[in-house]
Image (cartoon, rainbow, N blue to C red; front, side, top):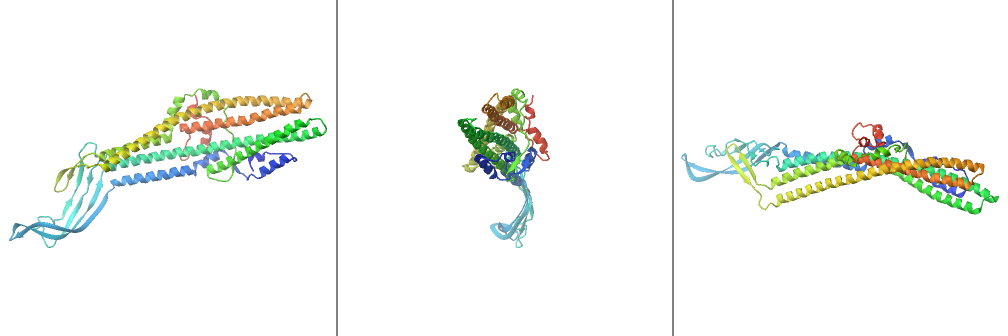
Length: 491
């Protein structure tokens, strides 16, 4: 049963009361109430689907970074197979112009590695098995000898921006960005849970108020029926009250549905399922209106630009795109390398003809860089808009709450005075009930204004990146921070 239903104490009698009891009985039983700390603690455990998706993206980015770094690992290689050698034929110890061939088994073993500066090395040893010919007869071709195969880039900047090094830097930066995006998802997880908790508090309170109003109306209807029977009240007055009773019943039913839906949302948000209820208090806007009015929106935007994890993530993604583009452009340029071996030193010039692959890589990298830049600019523009909206909302609803709170205090005095006057017979029961109705209409509006203030407050915390996340962060500390404006907001 909902929290509002637990507060319901309705006298027996009347078809409308029976309908209300039947509706309340149909609502499933709620789980144990959850405080704000309970909700934050559950959100910190990271069971939400959005956070699980971010965890998967982090794992994928980490794997990509490991794969890119693997291009600079040492590699052991062995190649072995048949080879035919050509050398001059010797007749009587004199070399002739006739070529002689011999079949041999050639084996080469060694290690290789590419370094981040573009230098590659492949030291090893080469072995021939040619029993039919001596080393001298083959002019040293079958001699066991070491190999080096050293390649050094000569063009300035071409070494550091080799494709493998650029890809590794890009992958590492992407991994950093994925972790920052995950941190923002963790902040949003807490944000969603807290907002849902506060919405449940508001729906519960509003439902309790409507139940109280319904109880008063039901009692009035019962009293008026007796008055009509003895001729003290006109039937039309009873009809008007009964019509009001029906409308209040509908409003109460809607409030109960909203309360039940909120409890389901709270269970889904926390990954617990069921119908957990909320307990605690909404953030109090009392005294916040003046301090909120003194805030500098431009300073808040700068704070958001410094703190926002998702903005930092997009900045990293743009840096990664820049590195990818640098590597792609390097691959499209002519390459000049110094090739050094144990028996030779040569300069190698190579350049693509046609450049389909290289130009395609450049175009793809350019598009990725442009996309990353546009996403970053879009988020910056959205932050500017959202901070203005959230700040205006916090100011506006803090003012609404103060106005409605004063109205509630005044109407409470009016109702207390009307009750005395009705008991003294100076005003009619209908006038007294009208005063009660006015108070009953203000109270839900006051709760709604406080909820909207709380929602704007949560928006500001998320927009400014001031929701603390990380290992060992006590839920009680997070709760205390979220109940008041972010520290940077206070004058």
